[in-house]
Length: 311
Image (tube, rainbow, N blue to C red; front, side, top):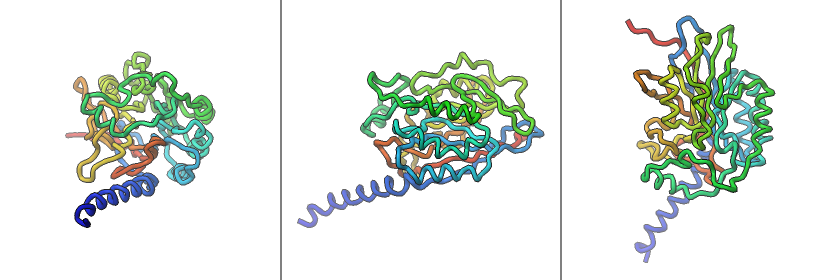
């Protein structure tokens, strides 16, 4: 009898322990990653850029709010928010409370699908099925009729009032120590709100340095930005795979990006040009799947340095 039930009970206990760890500990084990990227033209001092992404705020997440507030102590040159701030229609005041200290610094933002629409209960196994079928999450489609509208407008207004640049299918510039930093952004490709034609043409000649910003790193957007000559692209959306296998990595990216580039720094090549790509694993989860495994929540301090020269 013991042998008959021992193995199933052991598997159940291991699964329960794993769920308790991924939901109770790792999903709240916030950390800062530091990455150096050699992309600046000669003569520019290093720039420290804080990227926050995929906060997915739910009311009552005090630890997450306090950790985000503490990031202001890094004193970055500017902040880039790559979207999906919400996972709760009631979460806007808490997002603004969490990001309040960071809004004292120059910054810019794009929104993701979860800023516009509330999440739905969804079987996580569908992501694997869709990957096998060659589909990717919403696969570039608008949410279904009846999707819950998130109150994103007050969040946008607060960001704008703080001086953060709204990069929704548009361009903007920041002045940092007398240098002009050009920023080009797109609305979320995951729900077909990107309009690259509005920003096509590459970096402005008057910019000392330019970078591109988008929430979901779909290949069509990476191709366009790289072909147009942007040296650096910042994105989020993937959650780093969220549920990863130790020593193997992510199983899905929830877009058409390959899993080898699901998070961190990599490169993207198109039309003979190569750009650096940084994908943040983000610091939150969908409220209906509040777990992470082998993929802790994060923000990233990017230190941009002079390009390497080759003899």
